[in-house]
Length: 505
Image 1 (tube, rainbow, N blue to C red):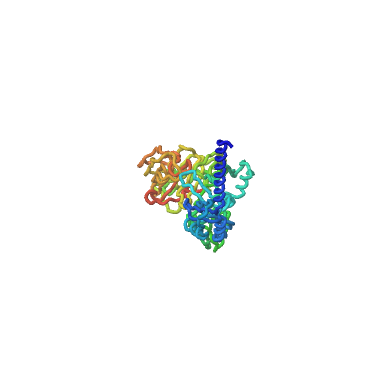
Image 2 (cartoon, rainbow, N blue to C red; image 1 turned 90 degrees about the vertical axis):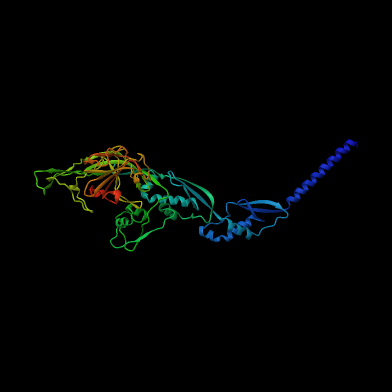
């Protein structure tokens, strides 16, 4: 064999021998002990021989969690990582020690869903947890049915609503205003996890931190009297107590009712197109006949209440109609005729009581043009008394009139003409006017535009244009807030129901 061939053969043998030892060494390492390093928040806390054994131990020791939520498995924290490796000299950690470290440092988890509620306004978004999607879907449906009749809701969902060609309502655009997303997640067992739709629905309706308040029914109680005594309106009472169908439902002495104020965490909204008969109260004009004696008083022209067939459209959020109403049609059925009362000589003052008022002698006039819609009455609302009535439907910039003769005692025109719900400008009234009518009677006209045409100290006559319909302050739409008060409302005056002056007929 030539020398050159001998050298090549020798090099090849050496290469093959080296490759043999390298492969042998790799196989020898590969055949070493398989272990699993356990990491928590990126820090190693030990090594185990079987990750399944760790999972089984967690399952065994967290049986109370499985019983509580009726689940098959309890899992380690999400930050726990287990990595497979091979080693000759790694010391295996006792499973009990690993479990104890995890228990001390992190929470165990169960499989569920994280629900994120993203608000559409300035309110903070929030999250909560459910065991499965069915719990969430059922809870939202129960929440919705607190604010709308089930038959009406189902008719909307199945597209079986009757057309609005007579007195009645037609619903559209139903839905939750917030953007709600749901994703699978291993949830800490120390979080509140809802596994019951009834419980979750109550939390969504009354607030996650609510404490239920109850009242025991006594003789003589009605839904209206219980509501008034606990700063609820009857609708809020019925929402909190769905077993009662109307404010006229019978109550049983000794039964307990829920008087907790609703504080919804989400917003169920829908549009209403409504056709109804609307009465417009007549105004009363007092004229003086100097030929008659002082005791003479007679209605010389009877008043006639106006009647119209009105079609309107508005939005309802969580049972509360939006302040802004669009009047689509107002067909006169009976024309309004103002009442005229003739009195002898000039009456310089009218004595007012604190509880009742004589509308026929008062000479008051409605503060807006016709047609209009009353969107909210004087009543408890969201835990506070709504101290007036809200009037809408006359349009942005429509005229607001002084309800009677008096002196303008306060004008606020410092607020933006475009308000929003929750604004504190003008104490929530936005731009407003207050008139002193004498005999300790005051009227307030709120949410008007800033171009107020009257000034403080100015004497005005009934029917004088004092403002224009607006949307300033804490407002959900173009409307007038119209209030009466015994005493100046800025200095401790007490609001009373304008329906004592303009009663529903």
